Length: 140
Image (cartoon, rainbow, N blue to C red):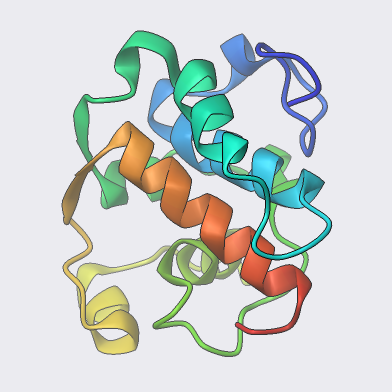
């Protein structure tokens, strides 16, 4: 996310990212740029600004994960050890690294969460951000 409209990890304009996937991409982009914990508090403002008017729109996590395709492979490098602490990265790695579709039962078994959990785009982006930052220090 070198600029408001470009993905740092995917190196493509955000307009080419499916709307359902933008919160995950934006959160992971910002998290990837953080070099020390806890990260700057301004990260939350950057995430909100990048999401724009869609920040408070509710969405299902399953919709975002289903929007992942092999071209989004740069979002994850490896599978988290603690799937329950990193449900977004865990599900994304299942799709992108293993090529497995994520089922609701599989996701619930690994995280205790419903795959159709509803949250705002901002909440999803912040979760992806936290997971990315924690993955960089091997906490997940």
